[in-house]
Image (tube, rainbow, N blue to C red; front, side):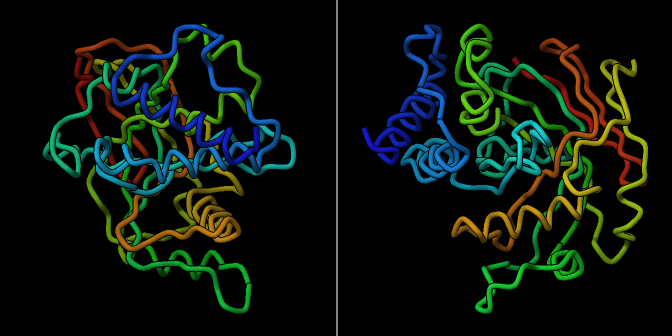
Length: 276
């Protein structure tokens, strides 16, 4: 089977499992692990373009970054986020209505991250030059603290059986994103965003803090990497897209009903209750 057909088949398995909440529970039914990073990204693109991405999940909301240093030669990995699962903490409603529940994303991990919303499209330049961090920063609308609720389309045992690219092929464990209060770009010093302490609290008890996993040194540097990386793959960030720039700390120490608070220095805090 060609790599294109394999990626389409893998995306079909992941997206159908996600939409139906019938998680893959048999290792024999797991999509094959992509043999290369390029073929992993074919799976991500097929998930992004899948009919269910729009009809069930509200379309593309933006991208997440992660897996820093996990794959040799790759600064990080990017993967699509879907609008249905991006929630504004001030309303506890997703950008297309409803809430994000632990059950509908097969949630297994919490992460505190810096999120950005884009103010402009960043298409590939006609001269092929990469974007600089200053150019990317000038295209940012706002920055906010976020809580990422990582998900997966298979059971823990199935995903544990996979090699690294097999684990990352499932949209880099994309799930839900809770957006905190937005800070306008002009109110921030982008260099200060690389040097603050972070923490995650569960029911007011600190469970973890202060380990950045942003590629290239900080969230805006990570965003710059993302812009140029997407352009290299024929994709682009668009006005209104959300980008979450990599875990600053993470925890599996939670359960349904817990109140989770992520604090990210001068950006402040964001809080959510984990819904069933």
